[in-house]
Image 1 (cartoon, one colour):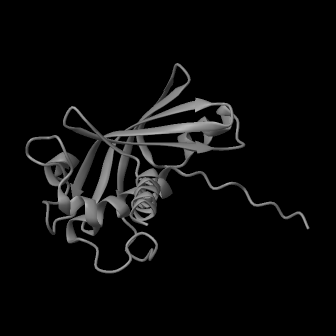
Image 2 (tube, rainbow, N blue to C red):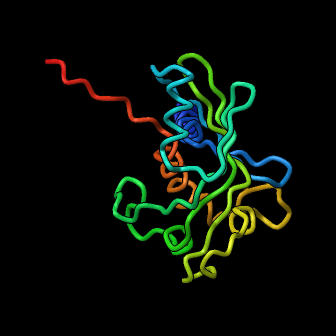
Length: 173
């Protein structure tokens, strides 16, 4: 009986971690996720170029290299925020560097140099602070416990919604 409970606990833990796309290496945080799509490489490039998410944008060696404009967490999105999100998460925007690798049928988003951009409430308006400053332990080897609670889930959902392509809905009956 004890082994069954341990096995179920491990499976549940692995399932929860599969949803997490944050990586902490060499004291730096990045977020990586692979998406499947029916769009061609050219359609993906055209979409990301025209979507308005990026300040700087270039295509190099089959990759999109871009700088994400500050994006705000949608406080009205109950799936993302839920109840009582941490103030820092909803009172600042996120920005950073993005590399989108393109392959037929899929694309991989690597989001790094993640920044929190102040709105004037908790961080001065327009001031940029590193993600690590707020969410990584001082030794740089692990995420803070406070990040592992709600912010990790909220940012995973928000980043996913930022980079997910909506597949066109067909009006076929």
